[in-house]
Length: 505
Image 1 (cartoon, one colour):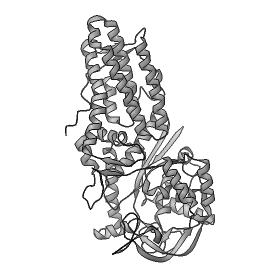
Image 2 (tube, one colour):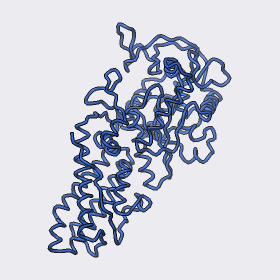
Image 3 (cartoon, rainbow, N blue to C red):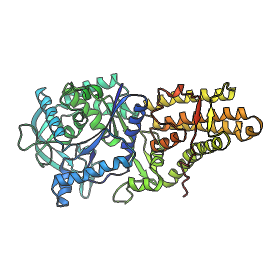
Image 4 (spheres, rainbow, N blue to C red):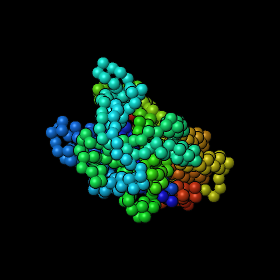
């Protein structure tokens, strides 16, 4: 089995913010999950470096455009390890491998009679890189404004068009057969409704700026963002060689995107691919947006969340955990300091971290730093272990369905059950009355803690590596295939150190 997951490629006209971090971490979580299942995974991210906005931004800074995009792309690349993410490739649209792949895709579409030359006019937003119908715009004192709040202007130019209108019925049929191809369900409905509303042919070239990939055999046309940027997902797999190992192994892949770019990924991109005789993506998941203390995040409000600052303040795994435990994946979320503190303290510090700390310390002090597999279990032990098996099956189901928050909720409800077991069994009392029973309880607790830690690894990997070290284990010893049968005769422990200090407001 193999698994291919991508972020959208990030536009380099500005610095990375919490939205970029959120999408990248989401992909990292799924990549790690599939690795834990024993699958070969490929995790791609990168930067979108062409277009009028980039050209204007470089001119505003009086820089050569290539130097400008080199600097801006580095900001996104440097952030990846800071987010605790492990990628397999970083693609840039200014790379030769991407340029040649995009031109090959163009030629394939042209050979298949999917592209024609005409003229385009309409309301265009430079900021959104999108054309809008007048009915979609709001009239203000300064002219027509797009739904995003971006200004628009009337543009007329020669353009190549993709015959998107010809793919309306085929896209509807594809989505009727593949009802899980777009998630969450509300986004699927949105996509199907948009397609059924009628598709118009799509403008896919520009003559008003030069910073882009040249249209083959054309002097004054550059490819517009859709053909250029979207092609990155296959150029990283060595397209147009569709018979190479990477392409055969990993395509079709899974795209994680923000809800604002769903239409481009779930309508334009599958149509391009089918028109080029390539299979559409396996799945597109559109997540929500974040607000900051209840307010929309924007530069004008000065409330943009810097990923470096927030991680420095609260800790990397704490932020990774908060982002995906607090809000159902796919919904909008609010980034608040109170919510971070409450979530981290309740779940990581009290429920999980405290369990590890007190049981491991007790074993080191009272059981010679090790626990041995019991000869016989009591009914309460069996119940707790069977409850883990249920938790494990639920976890797999939730993660396979892109429900990170539900997977985490499930684990932490189970950990509450484990903490109740500790209080009921009271190993500190058994120490005085029944040493054998105390040792059996400590083994059960240690085993369960290790198993739960493996489930949490995709979300908080650095902390879990430290926790596994307490038990002289690593991911080389355990994965999701081995976890159910993991039942060693002896587990030796090292002195634990606090992993999740409480956040004091």
